[in-house]
Length: 65
Image (tube, rainbow, N blue to C red; front, top):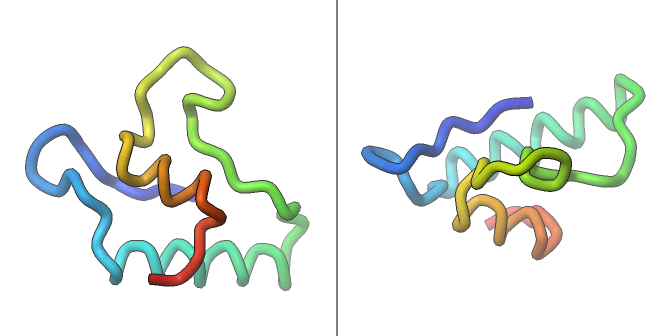
């Protein structure tokens, strides 16, 4: 799954993006083999991706806005 949030332009994930991510997560859990855990790139690699605002949302449980 992919959310495009950068260091310029769109830097704060808006409600539309967050709701789309939750929709995708729910779909993949229902129709695919996605597990319960949601992580950002920085959980596996030395990177700042997906950015502090989106990562904070992930760590807080990726709830709908």
